[in-house]
Image 1 (cartoon, chains in turn orange, purple):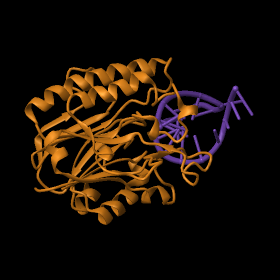
Image 2 (cartoon, helix red, strand yellow; image 1 turned 120 degrees about the vertical axis):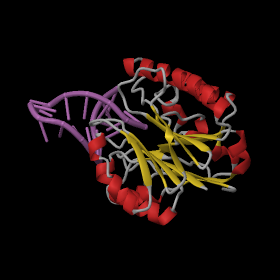
Image 3 (cartoon, chains in turn orange, cyan; image 1 turned 90 degrees about the vertical axis):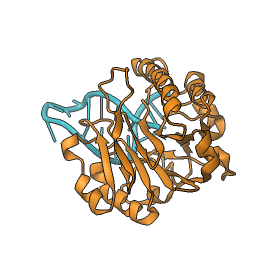
Image 4 (cartoon, protein in one colour; image 1 turned 180 degrees about the vertical axis):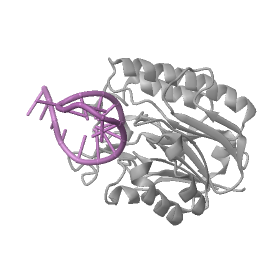
Length: 258
DNA sequence: ATGGCAGGGCATCCCTGA
């Protein structure tokens, strides 16, 4: 079973690239962030033609998430956003696929550590942690994946000195990432040996991709039964080389067994 | 020290992203 996440930065612009990538990689599940589409505009038919059933949860201009699955999608226990956390922004979509609880999330950016958006980010992260704890009680096999907007460690940052204390790298955000790990989740990427200077996002500006200046902020966290089944985790830089690319690259894991 | 690119929307000399 192959499960992937990709922040596409507008599905309207990136749909052809998503279809290409699905044909290329044939993931069983793909979660998308920053679709930037209202629900009436979601391209469910084009994705169905490509063999994927979809769940989607969007809004105008900002945010928006979706969950695509080839088969085994249990739509009955779909969840949108964090239960009990009042939120006008479309950031979370969850469902169960072949017994795996898949939670796709677009974590708040936070803009700057002294901003209102950072306060919102921290409240959102706290609510997420509480909810994931309860989800784990009913779903032992759980994957939390998406654009976390957190670089968990300095080795996830191309220039840790320049980024020290900046958004995505503050101690408060990193403590929240560690709090998710304290629930028993593990960073699938770090279960394996990886190339140094591996990033999932590169700024559009400054030739950042060509110079490989980026951050690793897109993650797949897996619960213990999935840790045992995970055979690989990688970042696919290929779509970042496309014409009109997303600034994020997809991240994927492969699981043993059904 | 700043902004540099990209997407969306329909007002812009704008907002947000990361």
